[in-house]
Image (cartoon, rainbow, N blue to C red; front, side, top):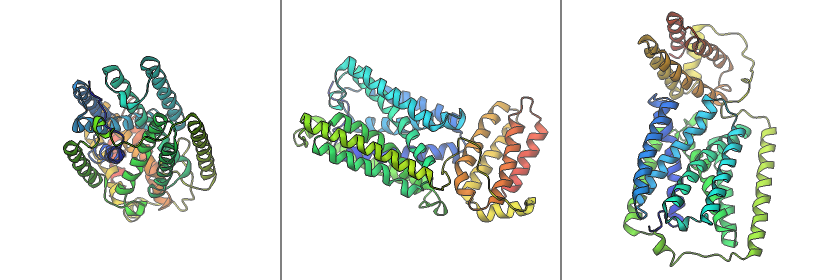
Length: 407
């Protein structure tokens, strides 16, 4: 076969980040806004991934539309797998990061032992392409876990959180041009584009009162899907990223052993410095922007609110988009309970827990009293729906009470 992947030119990184961003925002739109649910969304995209990967694997050469569609789908799928481990299985992010790092290292080890190369310029056989796509899937899962763990440690907002992966990618680019190992440089940058793209998606999609641009996940998805489509059309016409053509003008750095050792030392030093920065940020007072893996932080709620006061404060202090998301999940769960689908209700209500925990860092500072009041009612809903012998009347009462608070 001809090489099945594009040349790593500037367009490659532009569209890779676009794909990562739309993958994050589009998954959130389907999962949260449409109320499909985390597990159901993961199942849906796993099926789509199998289909588009089968189409991609049957091709005999690089086709931009097929290749980048596969990247978009695999970006969503890898992200969802990490989210399920974190939100459903309760696996701490540091464990997910470690497991995916070991899995990726093992993938590269087996790939190299069989093929004697990890270069994407040699994806000309089916086994190599299989290794390539599995490694890509793991890099998205790893990038999700690493990026979320970073946010959990630091409490940085979406705008600020863009700077760290962007700065590291810039450093890797400089080192590559100086003579760093090109394969190592590529895969490090590839992993870092995942948290970068996801943070850009959060920055665009989050409300302005949560340090975002307020475009929303659907609007963000449309913007970036349009950009991806335009880029793919351009690449399909110009063939600017076809390896057989691009190699004629490609930049080839001096990769002498001395330069490789020197740049590797700089990479190790940058990794140590990054760990030090994260440790410092974690030691500073902050509120995690993600769900906390331990007990929920306490706050001084003052005088407890009554039902009417809580409803008023929720409407006044909490983002309307967030409240609407909670309300939709509860209403859909209540419908499942009333229709006798208890298993479906138990599956869907976990999305309420995930959404509430994820928003904790932004809601708690707005109104400790309202957060405490709603948190207690959400606990009642979770307990009633997840009971070993559910009482339909108790479930309905708990959800109706919470819906009253949510307006």
